Image (tube, rainbow, N blue to C red; front, side):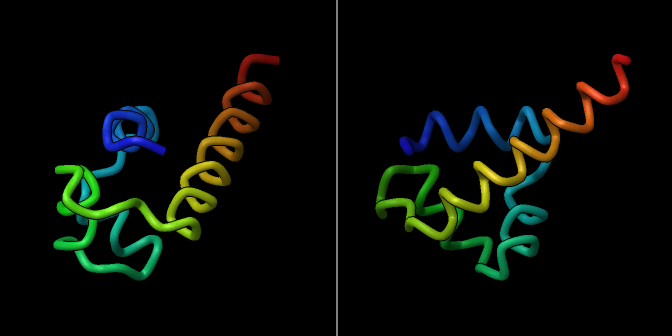
Length: 65
């Protein structure tokens, strides 16, 4: 996952950097580093984003029925 992809996912999810950091039990500073491309986004954070997006998509699909 690239910093731009993470940024887009957070926007889609309506999460701030701080809220995302709390959700995955990380620091806001770490998220800032990932978004700036200063550090590689760790695998567990990528999995968390994927799961959150999947859940959001499922909820949206159910609401459209």
